[in-house]
Image 1 (tube, one colour):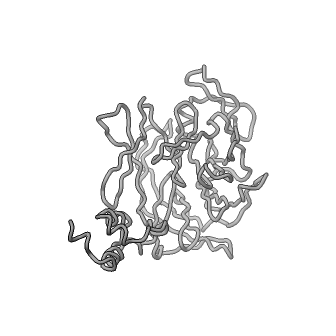
Image 2 (spheres, rainbow, N blue to C red):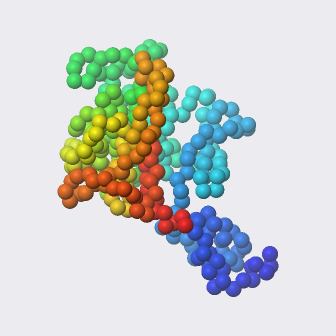
Image 3 (cartoon, rainbow, N blue to C red):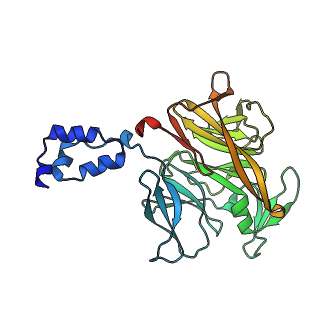
Length: 333
């Protein structure tokens, strides 16, 4: 080990410069104190990592379900101090800025930092605009949900509202920021609501019905309607209102799931083409869908329209229900 520690500093720096992955650069600094002294502190912009997957992990030392990150680059699990001791199931409905959105079984909505364990409570599910009343003493019929575009309400269980009427929640920034805003995609018509730091309820965000995807892009909220039209709003205004920004791309009547991704080339829309393969329980809307392909569109902000592209250039796209992102392939030779 003594011979390694005596390598000239310029040779150590040459070795480090030839390492491509962030993990390897960290390990290089851990060889010995002389190597660590010879190398500069790593700037944040060099932290090029593939996204880690949050997955359930079996832990013999804990009751219930534990969670961890799966690193696809090294094919390793990293266990977290994050567990569901009662086994009721944690329902993740978003992840951004290092925080995970968990819709809890008791109506609470909690932001969790999986690395530090810090938690921030958002207004609960019964404080959404579609809830007429919430009766915790009525098991199986706790929620009174307003009838959209009409009068009256119907009842649903807490599990039904949690699972089927709370689709996704995104964050404008870390909840530790003063201008933090959370936006939710919710309800039978896939509408939008938001809450700011310190709010006790969710506020309805005016606009069209049936949104399919939401994303913060350059400080503004972008939303896709069901047909791919783009709506945009500055959510930090006192009375934000959605405005149409771009028309949908040409439609050929195929069933698809839409994703918005912020890339080096601008705003990207991914169409995942799907078809129903099997009905598990049609009365409950439970079906098995199979993916048959993808189409990619780039937003032309000058003409305010989508145009189809055949490749993503240097960008790798990762799409998912909770969040989507792009990473340059140049960082992964």
